[in-house]
Length: 375
Image (tube, rainbow, N blue to C red; front, side, top):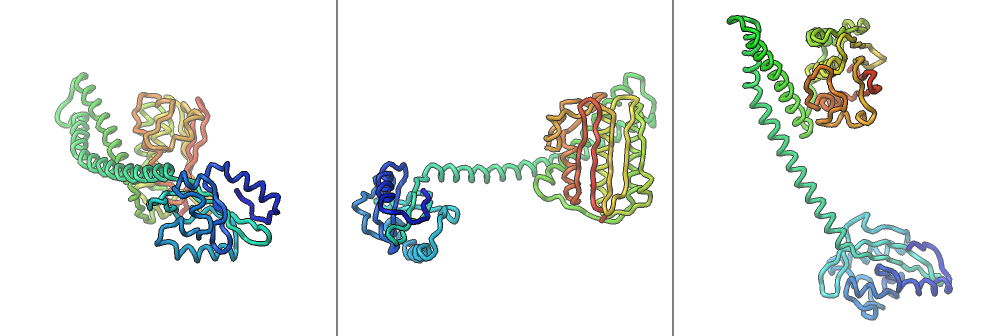
C-alpha cells in the first residue's frame, strides 16, 4: 500500500474498511510515534490485540535495545517522509507479546490526513522466507567449501600422477623408436596404443591442474616480452605432425607478425595457440585444410584458426566455453577430448584482458578468433 499524498475523510473511510481485510499487519502511526490504527493480523502474527497497542508508541513492537535508536529514525522519517522498503537496509524483527522476536518485512509509506503526517506500515511475517534464506546461505557456504576441497584434490591427484604417466609415455616412445630392438607388428600396435593413451592422459592431467587453479581463483600471469612469431612457429611445428596423420594442410597467413614482440604469459599463450590449432585439426576431415591467420591490429594481436570440419551446432555454441562441455559433433578420427580445453583457453584470454569468439555453421567448419593487447 503506497499512498504518499493527502487523503480526504471519504478516502480515509474507504481505507479504514479495507484495512481489516489485508493479509498482513497494518499500522498507522501519527507524527508523535503513537499507533492510531491496526488490524487483527497483529494478534495472529505478534500476539497483541489492537486494544493493547492503540495509543502506545510504535516502539512497543520493537526489541527494547532498539527502541531508543528507532525514535531518532522515526523523527527523521517525519521530517522527510518517503516510501521505502525497510528490509533494503537490514533484516528486521518485531517483538511478539510473549517476548520472542519474529522476522518481518516492512513496507513504509506516508499519508497526510487533515494536514497531519502519518506513517503507514505494511508488516509481513517473514519467518518462512528468512529460514529459507538462511538455509540457502548455509548451503552456499557448504558448496563453496566442497568446491575448494574438490579443487585441492584435483590438483594433488593430477600433480602426483604426472610422473608415472610421464614415465609410461617416455618408455613407450623409446620402444617405438627401435632404440633397444625392433617390435613385431602386434607389439608395435600395443605399444602405440599405450603411447597415444599416455599422451591423452598427460593432457588430461595438465587440463585438470589448470582447471583446479582457475576454479580456486589462483591463476596468475607471468608476463614477459617475447617474439610472438617464434612462439607461433613452435606451435605450428608441433601441430604439423598431427595434421600430417590426417593429411591436413596448414595454410599460414602470418607474415605480418614476423618479428612482432608482445608482452604476455608465454607458457599460457602457447597453451592457447596449441589448443586452438589442435582443435581445428581434430575436428577437420581428412585431406582438408586448416587456415591460420595472425596480424597486428592497432594495439592488439589478432589470431584466427579456421577449419573445414564438422562445425558446431547452434545449441552447443553458448555452452562450449563451459568446463567439461563437449559439442554434439565428434572429432573426425576418433580423437579424445577432455572438454576442458576451450574453457581454459577462454579463461587465459580473459586474464589477458582479451576476447575469444567463435564463428561456426553446423557441418561447414568453425573459426576461433582471439584478440589480446600487445602489452
